Length: 74
Image 1 (cartoon, helix red, strand yellow):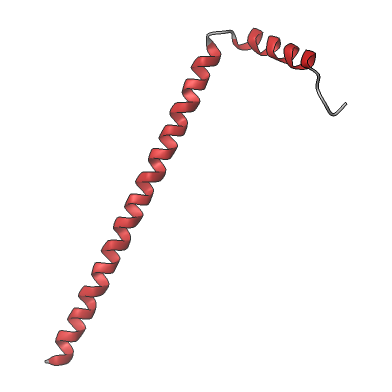
Image 2 (tube, rainbow, N blue to C red):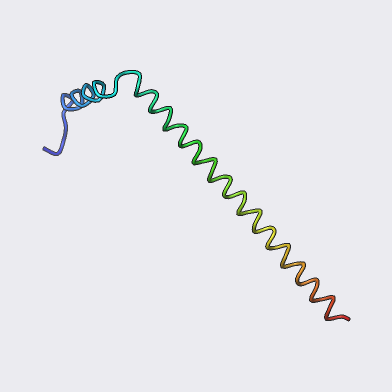
């Protein structure tokens, strides 16, 4: 009961083809690929903005330390 024979998979394939048609499956897979590419682009954009934010915070810390050093010497 836990394993499927080749006949089970063939019946499932026939039902899927009847439901979606031959042309719909490649279109669906193309949409999935576009979604994955969009997700990867969003993740890389997020990482780039996070790196820029860290750099800005780092620069702000150095400016604050420099300002403290100038006021301490005066």
